[in-house]
Amino acid sequence: MSDLNDYLVRSAAAISATVERDLTSEMERAASAVVSALSSGKALLICGNGGSASDAIHIAGELVGRFLKERKAYNVIALPANAAVLTAWGNDYGFDTVFSRQVEAHGAAGGVLLAISTSGNSPSILAAAEQARMMDMTVISLTGDTGGKLKPLSDILLNVPSTSTPIIQQGHLCLYHYLCEVVEARLSNG
Ligand SMILES: O=C(CO)[C@@H](O)[C@H](O)[C@H](O)[C@H](O)COP(=O)(O)O
Image 1 (cartoon, rainbow, N blue to C red):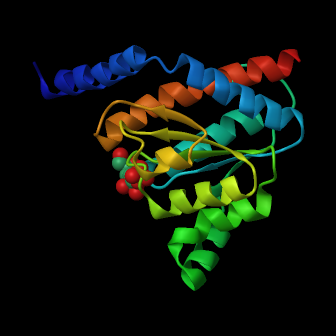
Image 2 (cartoon, rainbow, N blue to C red; image 1 turned 30 degrees about the vertical axis):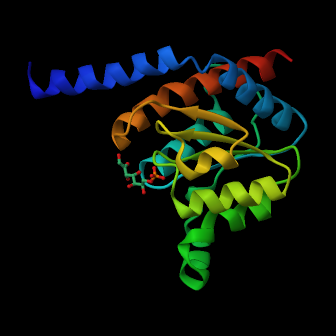
């Protein structure tokens, strides 16, 4: 088998393992929390580092703009997208609180934080989840196999059964595209 096909087989295996884990009920709870927040004027805030920062921005693009349907804009903010806040706060106070500071700014009780971390152990993500919990927000986490230190800070854990960062990220893409589809369908039919 070529290296490419081997990579594709390993990627598909992680998706199959996610099917076997059966995250159906967790995904239903996640979609309900997001629909409830957005329909009551609360924000969905999303954070992640590196590739997961790109994922956060990707999700905000789908939900502020459009995914599959023409409909109103939704109140969704990708916290890694604000370079001025990241650099000012990170430079002056340290990187670990760059997302928690923004949760404090934009979050509210009844809102949702979607925390994306393949390891589940990134300090900036843990601090954001702690801040969201303090503010009575729902914390939905996209992680790798164990959920790491983020698991006990999460109300809903969507964990892809792999320990490879890029392969976990590929699983996250499937999960959050599905979440966008369900949220958009429910909000635009409501
Ligand atoms: O995209 C990749 C690897 O695929 C990297 O940029 C990766 O996201 C970074 O190393 C992150 O800092 C990893 O953080 P986390 O997923 O463990 O929270």
